[in-house]
Image (tube, rainbow, N blue to C red):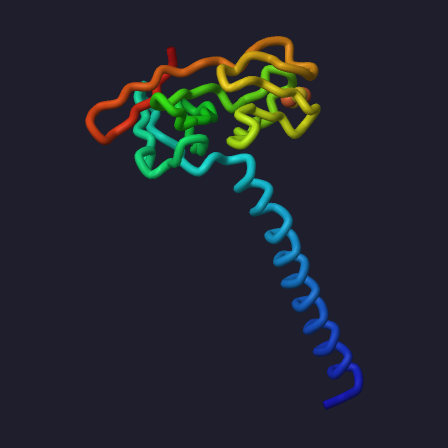
Length: 145
Ligand code: FES
């Protein structure tokens, strides 16, 4: 092999290696971000969405799903289930349920909502929208009000 051929082979290998490393890095950054933004359960395009595993939720725990393409948080309370939009009315970030504090928190600008979705503090201009919850036997369904 000539010296030029060796350099060409080495350069080709480095180009492929750098390309693979770049693709892995891009996937490692992008996939967790998309998983955070995309709720676990997508639900159907129709009105009612079953809360899978709702009966396995302990009191104070929550589950996020989609109802008609909108993220919704379902919370198990001492008397049943409540459901509210998981979209912060300030600028649209996903809020989280803090079971210990019994509050919804928005990580973007620190809006706080009580267990009924009412604004406690922060820049949110209004409450979290409520969703209708229906229990049928062991199943729990959520739909828009
Ligand atoms: S988006 Fe929730 S407080 Fe700003």
